[in-house]
Length: 84
Image 1 (cartoon, rainbow, N blue to C red):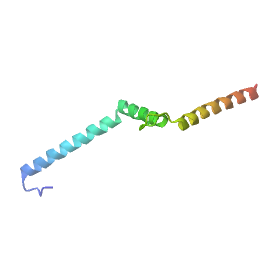
Image 2 (image 1 turned 90 degrees about the vertical axis):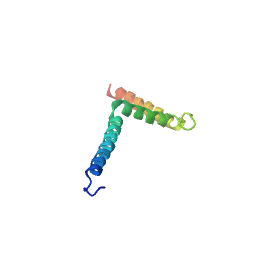
Image 3 (image 1 turned 45 degrees about the vertical axis):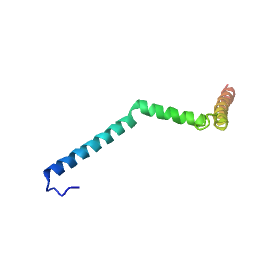
Image 4 (image 1 turned 45 degrees about the horizontal axis):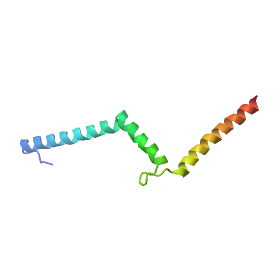
């Protein structure tokens, strides 16, 4: 930080701060863009079902999801038969 006695140093410091802030704003805009958010979420879902290191399917996670779906369907079928 300058002590304020040199106007050219102060101007250079202000310009440096502007550049740094512009970079920060650009980064925030990129992170908040819908395309970036969607691609990040897709990557998270893929990483849940496929091991990113080996590329092998994560059968334990796949079976958990399939079990949840089958269980939910079974509950709805039973409830429907009970209400008839």
